[in-house]
Image (tube, rainbow, N blue to C red; front, side, top):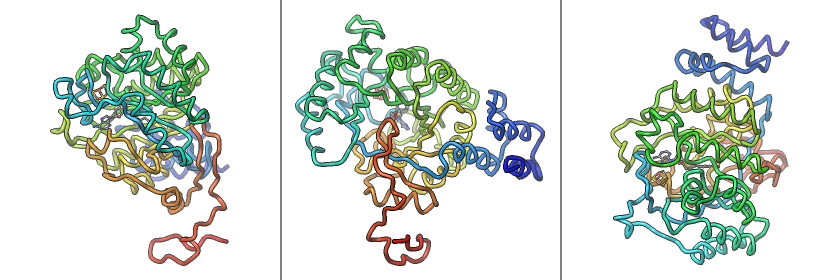
Length: 398
Ligand code: V47
Ligand code: SF4
């Protein structure tokens, strides 16, 4: 009954036969096809996409909106590769402009968080010969020795492909060695766009789409969990986006090892693609919504708020997103160097929780594996005890 009301809402007025058929699939929890996804990209209105994506979001999570307290460590920003969208890396011939940390440097960073309630360290950076299998194994072991409960989410198939090849190890041997050294999970980076028509132009020379997928497959089969991203809004078209998501959906059917999908909006400052305009917010919301509708076997869709800004992040929570990333005290330079919305993306836990509450969602701090760390449902902050005026939430019960 509730479902048919929703179908009526979406087909009322100008809903086409194609849209009605897609809506019926969504409300009866059936998978949409690649053609359906193309239809949505090309024809659906933002309102229609919002209804469908939000229906799925609320069926899976209600109002729950997750966030995680982590910190980023970037061993180096010098890189052998020359991805055209990258604003962050420095070529080896200009390595004096960048940084190259040692194990000791990185342990100093880890120790700097000793008294902070972070649950995860996210490690990713450029690709250089000295950052090899023994280096990363020692780094992971040192972190675990110092703080055993800190979850290590580290490196992408871009680094793994390079370091395993150099060590003459198979992906299987390499991932097993990383797991034994303390790797807990893999972040979603390096995926960009899998299709070679695009990948060869924007990320030539680094691991292919198939290699990216194979390393995640092996990691999942070893019992590991990982994330997946898609860098959109540059030279790709909708067919490439659907192809990318189809390959992720197929791998997820096989392994079930992905936790969250993170669409990453291309930012055009300081890179070789600066001549391309950036996508507008409507396109970003559309893309979140279609990802939520298409990736039926992904539990979570994450928005990286420092990249899109706080207000778009709030809006995204009605377009399929249930998870907000961007650490409370953000330390990554990948986005600030590419022109992200937030040049100083520090936010206290209280501010983040209030940002979520202002759009009537329910904030939950999670760990990397989505176990609840703190449920903020009944937590009242001092600042909420008074009436806070225009466009602010009313006082929360205390
Ligand atoms: O692979 C680089 C992207 C990614 C730009 O798994 C850019 O929890 C936009 O994957 N404009 C790395 N994007 C970051 C990443 C990530 C971020 C947050 C959480 C997680 C997770 C993973 O950043 C790269 C690339 O796709 N990127 N340059 C740019 N100019
Ligand atoms: Fe290197 Fe990664 Fe930048 Fe590509 S995106 S140039 S692999 S740091």
